[in-house]
Image (tube, rainbow, N blue to C red; front, side, top):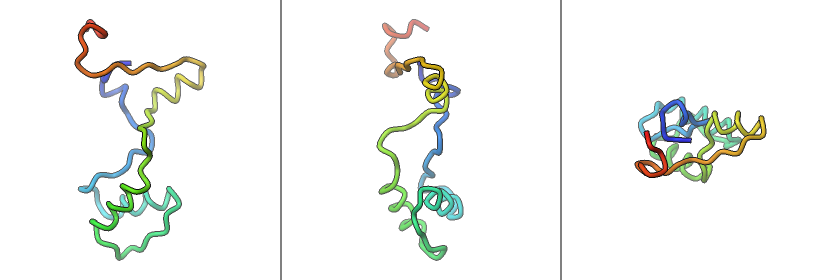
Length: 84
């Protein structure tokens, strides 16, 4: 799998530090973290950093694994592995 944008759509992507507060709070609550509406963005983002998964999960990878196909992601800019 190469690094094309349509191959790299993440499942439940964590919000970045520029995301609106409501998106941060919603993501944290989906992860089961009790959070106050009054927290500042810096505090919300530190909670997100603590609860962010170690590895990224991609939508296409999940779909391929459902059908029994192994997924091998290529490192970016390795022309010898990806001749395109």
